[in-house]
Length: 83
Image (cartoon, rainbow, N blue to C red; front, side, top):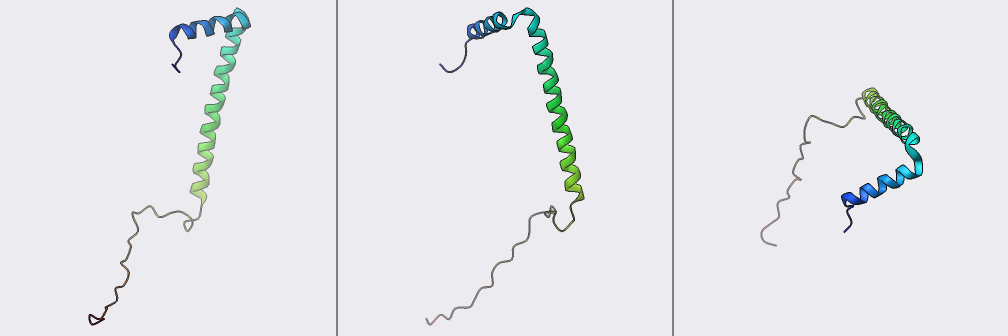
């Protein structure tokens, strides 16, 4: 019940066409495409800046990536049996 049937999409497209007209729709599509391009470019630049910032961190702050840390077992105390 929650999903839109194909005829719902047809009605939505017709209403949008009637509201905006035939001349405005190509401009809206072009604008939408340019905004998506801008978002992708921003994400790429942000990723590059993040990688550069991580590469510039001092070695002491970087987490160890050589493998799992070895955990030593706690020392066991000998308990006398006569208690």
